[in-house]
Image (cartoon, rainbow, N blue to C red; front, top):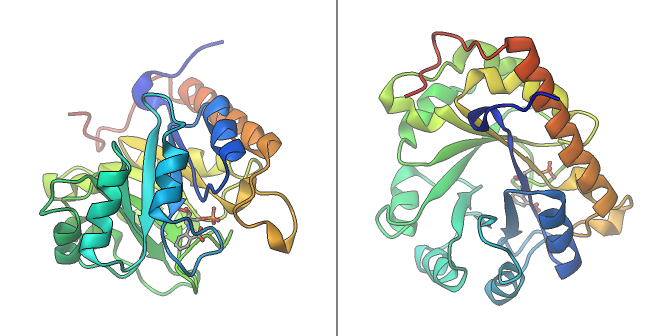
Length: 254
Ligand SMILES: O=C(O)c1ccccc1N[C@@H]1O[C@H](COP(=O)(O)O)[C@@H](O)[C@H]1O
């Protein structure tokens, strides 16, 4: 079997973890990052202390991601101190200035969620990425009430026209995180559509790897996590085969 080059390997983040068992399942399956929801209105909410406890289980090179929604800067900074090696995911209405302040004037790494409308209303992702040029990457999620974690998928084909990273001011667009309603069944299609638009792609899943049933937000299903990771790996291999290593000249590799 041919293996994709490391720059073509889709990174995997499993988000909304609340239990030791689920952290271990994500790590065992091969996740690159795990997410903790620090938003008190979410059913996946964990306190900073709990996130720190869970993150202590992580082996080296698996990144803890702390997800905030419109949180006070000092809370974000304190959480990052308590969870060493973490990076921040801003998933609310934070402005670039607020992200800068909350990340201790840019000293902490962050990704910024862009919430793409579910209808056809316009969303200028290139402009958004330029505004958040200090972000390590842009996470693409569906615009929903409650900010995220809804299991809803936006129309990926909307990205085709305006996602063409290249100019330095759009650096954050070169590193995309696809999220919103991903599952073992659809993640391969998402990778095929979005990865040619960026330099590195990660996929981020929460609802799609949880146990079925309304009360199970925050309760992961190890079998679904394994199937999700297998589907990502299969998509990587397929894409590597179909492109034969050739990338569009629009896509800077510097
Ligand atoms: O998970 C939540 O409860 C949540 C709350 C507020 C903002 C974001 C949230 N989750 C993130 O939303 C995306 C998509 O999740 P899903 O796979 O559609 O359930 C993902 O980044 C979650 O971590």
